[in-house]
Image (cartoon, rainbow, N blue to C red):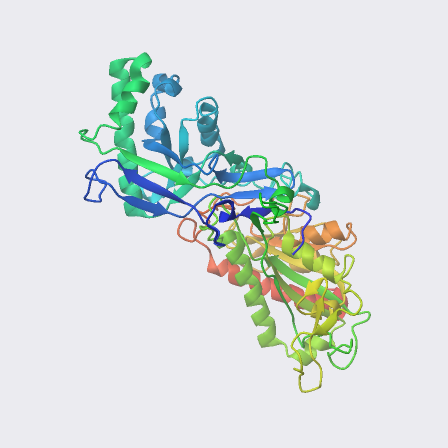
Length: 553
């Protein structure tokens, strides 16, 4: 799948042993003494974690985490909050630290804290990495901050040229950490509560011991003394270390360099894997297909002059740790809304009735939306902007010699490769209803509608859905949130638009974690009632938009 953004992710192909799994390298926790294997006693053992912050590349550089080279990075576990709680000590912290790995609460894993760590690391490379632990093992109160930028897929991001409202600040709780280049700062998430509890206590004990040595020995001697302290196996505290083996490529790698990598033997061996995945679409009513004779197999006619209303959302979410992306509100609530809306239509309206409308309803679930609207842009370019063209003589049956009862078979294109060409028969796009973050509402029993002012009446239809118990209000932002509708507006140059039904007004809700590993029903409960109501409104609005001249009655 092609995209204007061209972001890629790394793989272990940077390493001598190659495998194609995303989280290829690992962090190892090591204690310097002998068995038994427990944080309560000295031991010589290893625990591997694979919930890692990895690197992503774009045309101008990289974001994400990794080590400086193939060499591992090692350090003593130290609890960052314990060290920095003493302001006087913190002012001279750099002069007393041994090589260390910072252990921090997930709610402390912010751009500000990481900036403190990396700035202190600029001169002497003492920082060996960061371990972020599950905060359910502490009593700290939850703060709804998130690592996304304040303008998601907008200003100061690789995607800003693809977003018509790139400068609007939808996400005031975001600090932009997800876009930081943390080259030389390997980072992992510790989700296991039992392991995290032991690691946290060891890090606190070692931090307190370091502070006491520093206070008693004076700053000039503290580093040499502390280095000896943590290698002393007779200490009452087992010296617990973390070692990162997380090489994600040289500092100057970009997408182009990564994908065009030539080995020393002059063989092309790309060092990264493109982001992407499969998007899904389906038409309400009888399917449209392009047959191997070039004709249309839908009611025996063609779709010239027919138009469609897209009902669309994203399939994906993201976080700093790509193996922990629950996406409960950011993605799952949207997906469930569209699935329920489709079920409501299918259960209430038969195919013959749906086929009889001049406009048709098409449901679309787009992959890779968090990375430059990849799914929606690819689909819209194929369908209409400018529309897909298969090279002459390169169309073939999707499955050789397999035809349906009417003698038709699906068609594929060999170049550019498309496994079927049914999308070519959808018709003209008249507008889009997009759904975003409806599982957690900013205001009780209230949805908001956002549009670009050219939405084929879709906003008016949605606003009519207000009932005695639920409200659908006009959004006050005057902008389109980053959704598949952004792609339609941008690619059509504003000539085609639509409306976004969301759970927020002018900013994302304060009570949810946007693009975070904490976007889970366990940390911010999703309202199934609001999802069900959103699905009802979407189904009704989609039906009204294709029925009787679009007046919504």
